[in-house]
Amino acid sequence: MKKIIIIDGGPRKTFNTAAMLQKVAEGAASTGEDVEVKTVRLYDMEYKGCVSCMACKLAGRVSHVCRFRDGLTPVLEEIATADGLVLGSPNYFGEVTGQMRTMLERLAFPWLSYNDYSLTAERRMPVLLVETQNGTEENNNCNGYGSMEHCITQALGEPERLTAYNTYQVRDYSRYELKGFSEEAKRAYRDSHWEHDLQSAYDAGRRMAARLCQTL
Image 1 (spheres, one colour):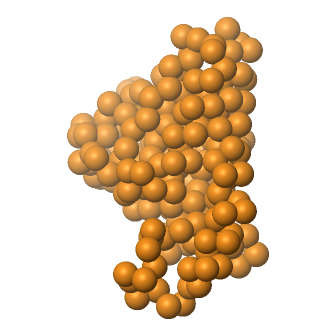
Image 2 (cartoon, rainbow, N blue to C red; image 1 turned 180 degrees about the horizontal axis):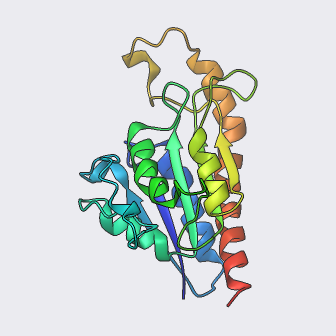
């Protein structure tokens, strides 16, 4: 049995990021292969970022998994033994959410060696980075996963990237002070792109599951 862990770093349970990740999960499950898919919502958990305890770097006891114990610990341990990893987040101020960035600190710091500055995870695996954002493909301030993408690439392998642009922020723009946006234009873009974005997420899930099952 192969296992794919999906980490949802968005706050809303049924909106853009959640919908994209649900399609990834459906795509992975649709292959009919021996693959388990588990989704974890970071906003449902209580945890801290790296506390610089350095326990992962103790001489003779180096660990590639964070040793600090809190609500995130089981998730980090599952990622270390997974076969595929999917990370999803909306774009806030040009980057992933604080919850996602905090989780990535805890995930990546134990990979980093201060002897030779290499980055080594428990195992390499396919990774999909999903991002949803209000900006358009031509005009956005996206730095996405930032320096953490480099860590992921070095420790786990080159990730696949999937971005949904110009997404809805709310369902009814008339209820909010959002006059800088044209709801009509947003709706037109969504009508012509959103189903394609969801299909792309579905297809990415299928690809990951198929890739994993080639190694069974």
